[in-house]
Length: 161
Image 1: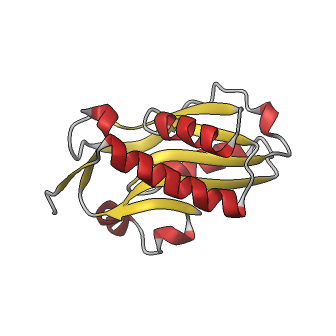
Image 2: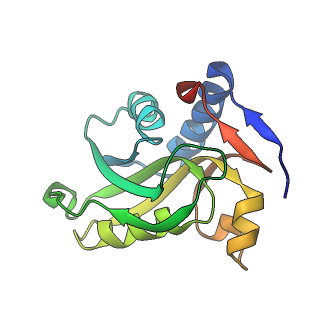
């Protein structure tokens, strides 16, 4: 196991989000951004401003039991006490800060599809390749449309310090 810890500065995360935003602007015009709570909230707001998307929704998901490094994971629990009826027929962008095993983003996409959006795309600031490779056989780039950066090891975002 790689014990490398990647500390991400505010400048670095802003650069990553702006990079993703530039790529999104070239290929997709989301009408609604869905933020995965908690980690996806800050990137979602920055992207919403960059992409001029005024409608930002939140979906809460819990996969780890605490915030410790490499905390024990469980099957993601999605808060289904939500009303996303406003996404029907709309282009949706789901945003999160990190992708590890991919379990959370898969569950969120399943939930969002129930509300019949026109199209769903995903944006992930950072992919932890180490965790992805332990959990999956396919390439994460087949699952996620917009990726800011890939690393190996644990990631600590500036809002977590």
